Image (tube, rainbow, N blue to C red):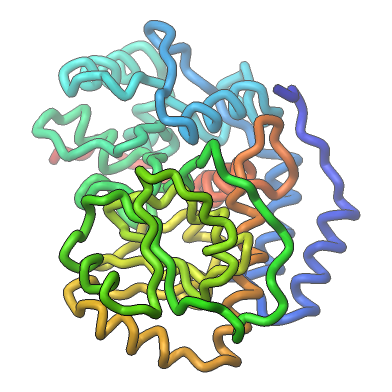
Length: 347
């Protein structure tokens, strides 16, 4: 694990200039992103509380984020220079123990009470639910939660919380995007877990324009992704291969029957132009109609942006500039300005 992150101001400026000069861009605001990114690399500091006992995250993405943060130049031993405070705790921590942890922070450290935890963040791969305990409720409502996409409904607060893209240990990120998408053999491709949205998937199986792979069969799907215009992702199912598919120019289509606001890097990427959201309740017929309504011109733009965006969703054992670790840190950087309450609020 590298202990420092190289800062390449010239490289970043050239990258930013290229992004601005060659539309379309996958970013919400390219100019702001790269200016802020450089400031973040230079100035951002995070203090990490010492956990009560050693623990590990079983989720690969959460584990890699935690270890990368520990050995990054953002980690400071001086809480007085910190912009944010990280509260590490095991995903197995009970609500009672979590309440005790927050209470200890309130009593034994001066930092929590200044903002009621609004300048604190924590990692919970599945997210935490609401609780009647006042301490846990403050943590839930005020502190930034970092969880792994997708998050259970109710465990994620939009505009405050952050999601990590899943880490797929078997992923092969392939940068070469097929030049001609019009020769694609399939309109949509789905790598299925054999359970999620089974009725919807059975409808898809009956249409020859869709290809369904059952995950447990362990089929090599790289060529199938390349030969498909769209890659279908069941929001409640397996999405770990999303980044691999995007890197190969397969436009993501998230199948979900509720509003979705927990996509990774929501503060960075223009997901509305990168992919599509389609309701499963409309069935295969409705899905096919939506996909066929995408013009070739619009589809070409989506493919370009999808491939460009995928580079920021890649996990590295040794962090690299502009990779997913740094993009998550960047989202924390955007949240470093907190409200300082004049008095303690009650809930």
